[in-house]
Image (cartoon, rainbow, N blue to C red; front, side, top):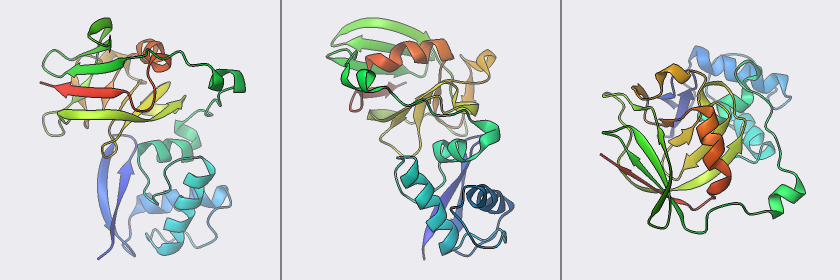
Length: 211
């Protein structure tokens, strides 16, 4: 049985759909894909092969992992009402490397803090929002796998995706909730703080999440 996962961007939760199953959210995805000329089928709210193909084509066009799964970042990029335009890096910015040579991130869920290190030296420390009791932030050793500027909506102004499921470190459009247990597992930061660490880390930077 082929089961895929479709994510709800407004709360970053997930619903598993079998192929050919129906759901109103699938109809919304089909309309967005149709608007972008990536889907030519009916708006029948069915998670069929044609819909999955449209999602995959969109991800390839946007240089996202071509999984056919609508994760939070894919949804925000699809949905014009909840996202801003991705800002491409200039050639000069791509050549420049502002990252710390030995950058690593420690997230402590008990104190709800993120600390950026260069080697063993702490550089910056910030308050963060973490997962709720029912959807806790996963403890473990990870790495940054994807960097995106201006994802918009609930992801704020920066996205640092981890190499585990759909979790990541990101900004927020609800800054008053930083410091609380609010998310479905992601780590939320004030936009100005995540913008500060964004150029200092790179894909592959270790991220340690501890209690």
